[in-house]
Amino acid sequence: MVVTGASDGIGRAAARSWTEAGATVVMVGRNEAKTAAAARRIMSETGRRTVHWEIADLSRQDAVQALGARLREAHPRIDVLANNAGALFLERAETIDGLEQTFALNHLAYFTLTIELLPALLAASTPEAPARVINVSSRAHQNARVDLDDLQLVHGYGGWRAYCNSKLYNLWFTRALARRMDPSRLIVQAMHPGVVSTRFATNNGWMGRLQRRLMDVVSVTPEQGADTLVWLATAPDAARRNARYWVRRREVTPSRLARDDERAERLWRESNALARVDADATIAAALKTHAVA
Image (cartoon, rainbow, N blue to C red; front, side):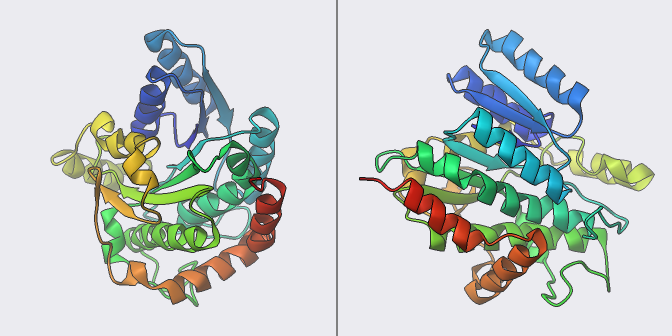
């Protein structure tokens, strides 16, 4: 199992639960010291030595692609990919690729890493046990205000708006990918973890710390926030329904905008161009290579 954003919060809690259950887990984080310490602590607490870690700045497309190549080499069969890494940025900034950083980290990293790992995911899948991709979205998608001609929010940027939009993009990506895959080979799901007590938003100075204190009034623990993510990775019920949105282990209908497949396809095409990949060709090649006899 591969989980991004794993050095803290629900990513770390999920990694611990999967390790306890006997899985081999790869924890992906940005800070090497923090990620390594989290992995070693999980191994110490569980008594299992099946935790690995990888370091990558997922806001950079070259780093995402390099991570994908390393993971395919080290783990040619991957049963579950949990796209969890994300952040809120109150001030607009661009990555080295010239992309608005919220869009780059919260959406495009999901897109690119998943496409990069499709060969390993399909190699692990069987008709009885399809591989799974789980995209951590948010109820915040209901507040999205999207202009598909301005995905980078060059005009009208707001940190909360950028975050809400990115969580909507997670749902559009879930639906667009699921439409392209045989559900007996790959199941794609999205989920809302709740408002979780983590360091989320504290990267934004005093305003972020104030926001974090207000959020903590209604926050759940990382373990509670990770529960649906952990469940989606193995639950038979989750494998019988594809491209769904889950909250507290229950299927929930997302916003009407989140179910707009025409706009989801537009985002898919734009993501292809921005990531400089041909995702549909990669999917076709991976399905052919790993066809079930």
